[in-house]
Length: 238
Ligand SMILES: [Zn+2]
Image (cartoon, rainbow, N blue to C red; front, top):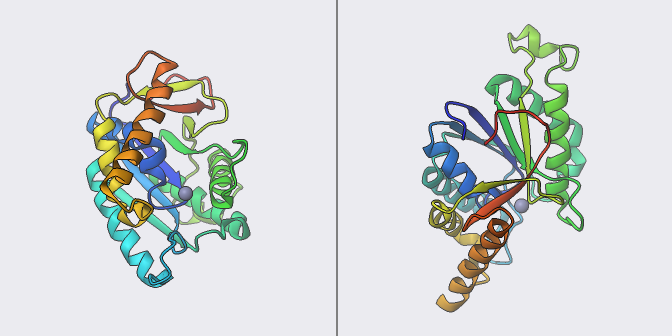
């Protein structure tokens, strides 16, 4: 388990981090690492509630994300502010903004989506996975975005990248001690549990989270785990 590392978690929407790697974030943050979160969209279309317009929804979701970040121990949240569902149209600009953030924050480890996951229909999830992976690779090349060098922002290569919700898992993080924290951080995204009309619905949702983490844990002998595809054969390790 690493200590004193910089970790950058790059996601599409408020609640992605908590859903896919909340236990890992809590474990890393409480274990003496510095976890920062990049939200590429503002989540302004993530509701079935026709009475809640996009502008109000953004306010709600920013507040929810702030609460979740505090629960998980995330030190800083960067909002890139793209509209929900539109990232594919901004992919080049998104990649450049992520290069800037990677060079500024100098993370040792990046956590992001697996863009190659079969049947991943959300275009924002695929776009973030591609843009983050490409940004990580290009951030180390001085002739990519050379204007950043003039601003005093030097090239940087994050040593490791882990893809969450992976097509092919090859790495598991034990979150047995952190499953309740993960659930708590997910549930404060109240706008994203509007499907739960009764307490029983909510308990069903909690059971689903636990069952998913338990299934991941069964692959590696942990009570609860989160699965990743570890991209490089390096030895920093989560
Ligand atoms: Zn999402």
